[in-house]
Image 1 (tube, rainbow, N blue to C red):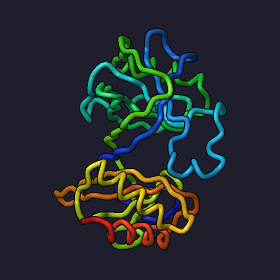
Image 2 (image 1 turned 180 degrees about the vertical axis):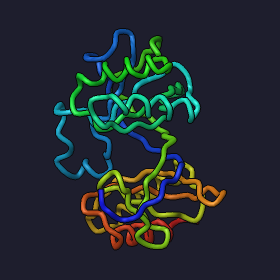
Image 3 (image 1 turned 45 degrees about the vertical axis):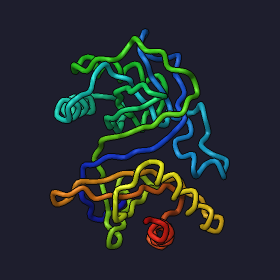
Image 4 (image 1 turned 90 degrees about the vertical axis):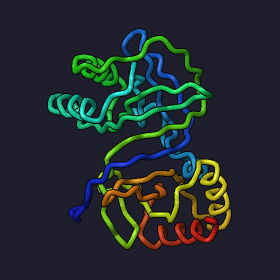
Length: 237
């Protein structure tokens, strides 16, 4: 994190990732998933994230959709006493045609904390789903409803104040996932060996939904975001 000013915005992020079932160190008869390679568009070109060291992106499957107040108050209460300063967001994952409500967890330091965190959410009134069969190592569409802590570094360009190597830029219209996938492939082909991972999203600002693209890459800065955005804008019809 930096000392620069930032603003909080609520919005949504859509991405596709491969999820793996966690079979141990969880409460019995519950479902927990992990994105072991959460930025595939970037790490497929590099050595990648070291596995089996600590949890990266954990998804607790819950029994029903929470409203924002219920989720926020439960998480706020848990964070006041839990052993690590984790980060949580609510959302859904879609696998084939099945949709699951989830809480996405970041910043756990060991897998042993997952079971404790599950118990905390149960104590705060959020139930966990127990009657679903999800295949191992399967692709899923993930939609997260979350707060963004944004540092504006240019007109329509932002860096994430909380998560390093995350940047955002606005786009002039809403894109479908298929449009976004096609554009991303074209842009990457023309980026002269610069690799990045991208997700589709929007934020609420001044009573409007502002469409944007999230970019992940190491050493991300305004110049790189401008180059990537230009490639997208040139191709958006």
